[in-house]
Length: 321
Ligand code: FES
Image (cartoon, rainbow, N blue to C red; front, side, top):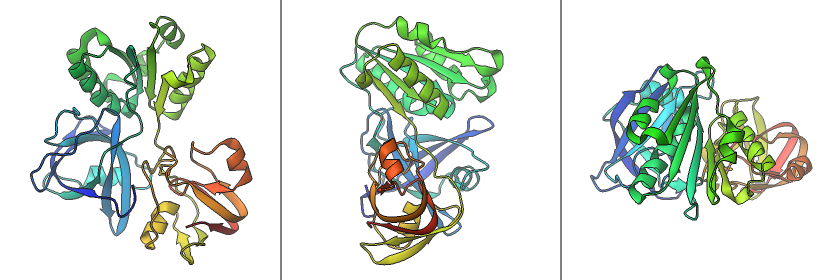
């Protein structure tokens, strides 16, 4: 996907305050046509004009993949982030016109699985809502273990429990209820695939436990989009386009390139997909490699950078864009 890729012009048809932190948004096409079909786990990039700053944030689709009348996402408000989620919470109202990317799925269900075991933490529930609807329609076997801070902040927990009954297990941190992961993984039938989406620590814990217990790497799936961190402004020379640009404190390098008319590919805008990987020609300083795409060796050698999330401090950075 890139700046020139096709987009979907939409209108916001519904905004629902789900709890103190989360709002749900529904979008339909402005021309009244059906939305493109997608598969559970897909995300769209939502474009926002935040007081003159163009923001493009990825959000998992949570509506049923069979519902082409509209798309739904949920957004958790982040008061200390760069402003995208705050913009969604404070500016987006029914009737507003917006633009979405076409759906892309970096977290698909593996159709070879005999059973799908899902572990969700907090707002990480959203891709599973769509995946469970898909599996229900296909007659697929699944089980969800959903951990959240409290009943009041457990978005969709009771709805999912009511709908899927004993296939949904809820855990509230405040009530000291925790997933007994080792026992859970031990008791799974052969051919089960494991999926995890939630906070960084939860993903690392689930992946490490599965590895330790001998789960094949190909049977373990995770999704984590990182929000581009804020930091000090820095300058970058773009060798291919012959431009020198400044990346503002609350802007990513990818956003700064786009603002300067330099096309760059992307899918996730969150350090996960590898699409924006860019060669570094010269690095006199330190790159903050905030992605989880590059290997430790690649990060240490400073020969590549992921412009969607990584930042720089130092005398000179020259990259191949
Ligand atoms: S756009 Fe996916 S890693 Fe940068």
